[in-house]
Structure formats: C-alpha cells, structure tokens
Length: 481
Image (cartoon, helix red, strand yellow):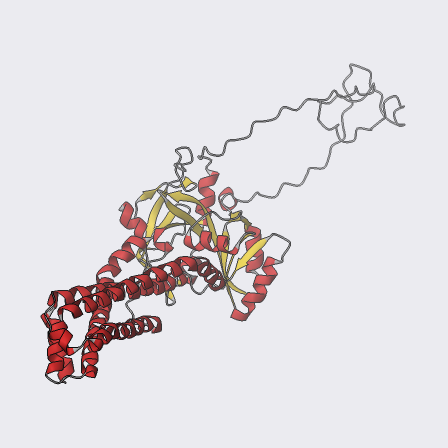
C-alpha cells in the first residue's frame, strides 16, 4: 500500500498539472465515446423510422430514391403509379394489407401526404410503436387534415385551424389551392420520425383540391383550329341535311350519278321530302354515376406500402413486382434499403472515428509530456527515494502507477461527461433534429476504446520510469547549474 499512497500524494502535490492532464484525457475520451454513442443512436433512430412494412413500392427508379422520398421525405419520387395498379397488387394472394401514399404538395415547407385511415393503424416505428393521436381523429373527408406534432408546434395549429395546400414543395405564389381549404381534425403524438413533420390528408382530398382547378400552375391548352373540308354536293333528289349530320334513318343511299333504287319516291327539286315512317323509341340511357362519387376517385399514387401474410413471401413478391411488365415498378425491402443507405454514408462515420482517435492520441501525448516534464522537477524527489532504500523497481512502479491513475481518472470523468450530456441534451436534440439518442449502457466498442486508453496510459508511464531508473543517485542529489 506504500506505492499507491505515494502515488496519490505525488499527484495531489501537483494538483494543477494533474488536473490539466486529467482534463485533456477526459475530453478525448468524451469525444471518442460520445461519437460512438451518437453514431449508434443515429443508426438506431434511422433504422427505426419504419417498422412492420415488408415492401415499399414506387415507380421504376432506384431503391434509395423510393425509400428516401416515401419514408424520409427527401428528394423527389421517380414517378407515379396508377391507382388501378395499386388495386391489382392489393388483391394479390400474398398481400395482407396495402396502404397508398401520394406526394406532391406541401404546406409552408411541410410535405403533404395523401393516404387512407389504414396508414395510422399499420405504420410502425422504433420498437413496434404505433401512431397515436394527441388530439382529434383520423382524416376521413375531402377537407380533413391531420398534422404531425412538429407542424402543430411550429405553426401554432390546433383542432379546427384552416390549412391551404400549395402545389410542389415551394409556394411560388401561383400554385395555391385556395379554393379547397382543409381543416385540422387531428394532431399526432410526437414520434421523433419524419411523421412529426408531415401533413396528412385523404386521397380524395388530394384529388378534390386538384379538381377544383384553382391552381394556376396548370394552364388549359389552347384549342387548335381545324380546317374544314369541302363536302361534295349530294345527288339530285337526296333529302337535305345539315353539313356534318347523318342522313335521316331509312334514307336510301345512292352513289353520285346512279339511278335511285326501285320504289324510291321521286321528289322534285325544291319540294318537301315525303314523311318518314315512325321509328321505335330508343331505350333510355343508363343513369350516370353520381359526380361526387366519381369526380374525386384517385387516379395516381406516388408509392404504396405492403404487408405480406408471410415474411418469406416478401422476397418472391418483390421479384414478381420488379419483373412485372404491366407497369414498371420498384419494390424495396425497407431493411435492405436502409442497410444500403448506411453503407453509402459509412465513410462519414469512419471520418468521425478517425477524428476521435486522433483526439485520444493527442490527450495521451499530453499526459506523456506532463509526466516527462514533471520528472525533471522531481529529480531530487526520486533521488531521496533511492537514498532511503527505494529500489529501481519501486521507482518504476510509482511512475507507471501515476500514469495509470491519470488515465483511469480521465476515462471515468470522460464517460460521466458523456452521460451528463446525454441527459441534458436528449430532449433538445429530439425537438430540434428529431434524433432520438437512447441512454444505454456502454457497448463492446466503447469498452474497447476505454481499454485502449488505459493500456496506452500504462505504456506511456514506462517512458519517464525508464529515465528515472537510469538516473544515478549522485546525479539526483547534485545541484544543477
């Protein structure tokens, strides 16, 4: 116990140097462990954005384009999918449920999504959490709208607030659907996903606001004049009819210049034609469908989500959709696409790790410099230790123990600093960036980093210890000029 007590008293006697050395190591460990913690949190938060969906189907394009545009609201979709195509795949035996998804409009920078009530029941995120309503209900009418929590907070909307949607993601002043305003009927609970930043309407609402024709972005095409052709004169005796109209029923047709068929009553030019025989009345036309029922029928979609009856059927269904020639589609398995996306941005992740490792190296180098420079000031102290009987092994153990204690103290303070920042910053980060950083125990990677720092601290302690070991007793007691 003598050496540990001597080491503690030695560090305490050099409190300022010890504090600065521990602070540099603690900051390095905070950076290293913090980056790893944030990286794991971002990956979990990213992967947990969508759950319970086996396939995301959109127009033919890249898998990442389908995933980013439909789930994260990033970028533009590759195209549109016919609603009839959605209905056809909805009836596939392997499909358990299907939810349509329509994009293309926005409200004050927030994307507007047209979907059905089944979306709120089927969509899952994080640990199989479902969408819940903080207030109100799901949208069911043409003018109903449901908003995410961030939309409600930023725009100060409540139940009953009116909303006007614009065509596209930016309001250029000429694409507003002012003739078809919506009204808020529901506000969603916070999910810390892109759902919080989305405005949801019904598919019929999407069609209704476009059918109103209030958007000046789409101008009607100008009619193209058609040059009328001169029709040949009818043969003499042919009943008169308006140009372009069909001849009366029962009127015998005759080629120009040919004799009329036998039994045809002759009519002098300028006289009225003989009365035509009475015709049987035509059947009454079938009653047309109600305009309200057919006018707002959705025609196009951006994508649709599919849940299969069996997860194993998702792969076969994906291949069947991607090779179908009726309408080119791209079916994406969300987990596979997320892995591909994370692989693409992995270079940035490696860059952060390299920066953190360099930070730890700088901290350990600072500790080496501090120990080595303090050894010069402790030259007489080491000589006195050796004069009272301390052997070289005791001197080496003392210096190595000091560097080990500095590294251990820096690791403990650094990890405590990481968890303190997580506790204080978790809520603001979620509200500001929508990123959920879970407070979890240290993983294998973090423990590995801490072990490397501790071992490096022990090794660094040998450098001043070897110098002290080689310093003679006479050299330590002799005054320096």
